[in-house]
Length: 444
Picture: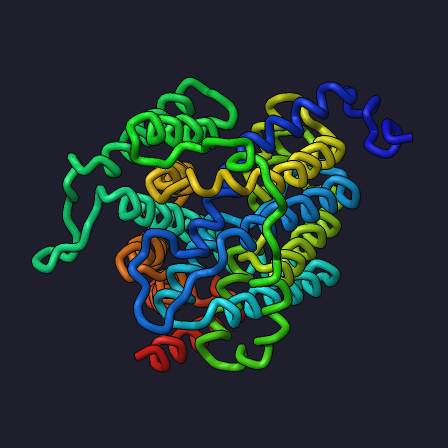
């Protein structure tokens, strides 16, 4: 029955291959279970008065459950070997731009994630998604992905102590002889070696090796008993339902921009990931993605689920290509991955050994991978290069993904009009131009 539903014979696969593929995908993205709680808790950050991070235990549980639910929906409804989890980049935007930068309470930010997920569901069930995808020029989509990569890497360098603040030059090189910084550098080196050698799950293994090294040299407290490794599932009470409780706080211009950014990044990141994974698996038909609506619905439903539980936007992970590389071709691989995320719920005590120095290499490596889209941007056209460059450079320099998107989206219509290409600018882009102008006026 399952073989027929997942079309094993048609796609030339079997249970063993799909199981290995599902496990491979899980190992490739398991780092999110520890990086996401650390990010949303603003771990290692000196918080200004009135700003609080989220409860790490609750976020760990929300991350695992949201990943399991989203991946299960993707496997059963869309029947794709694609896994989902709270996305890198969007969690950084949530924590460092919305909560830390704007001073918006994380409860209100969760309400923004919930609204963006609901809008995404509506778009997924209608024919509007194609119009919106076509409205944003491809070069700006690529720039957003690369910019987020630079921003995440910058945060990683900060958490590692490699980049520090400097009154004269804003930032400068930190003291590389500090033990925790040396541990982070060791982690970067190990992760780079593993990924260069093509080790699937290299980021996750790099974190494990770094944590073990930290324990050996005494920088991280070692687990001394089984309860330090396996334990009860952390309570969701600190975060569950907070999005509903603060729903009434989202009706501001600032939150409108926040919601649009959540929606924009998730929407196009998902579309790009779906196409990339399906292409590698040979599942594209006439250059179109079969069951695209179902896949987008699974993604948007996962975002809503995650927001209710207490985590940032849940989205499709490009690490799913690791499972496809291991032979995964059907949604059964996603079912297996979802099962491992549920199993991981019982390993929350390991959060104590995953310090900012251990997660920093993961942030930097993910930044490297995301910045690969730079090569696809048409830098030869100045009217394209200017807004794309402003998107990319503004994100790390202003410490804000929304600001980077806004600056690029303001300059794009201007440069295109001056170049005599105004007819190529979609009306939606003019609408976003006005929204971001108001955003900057309000922000000032």
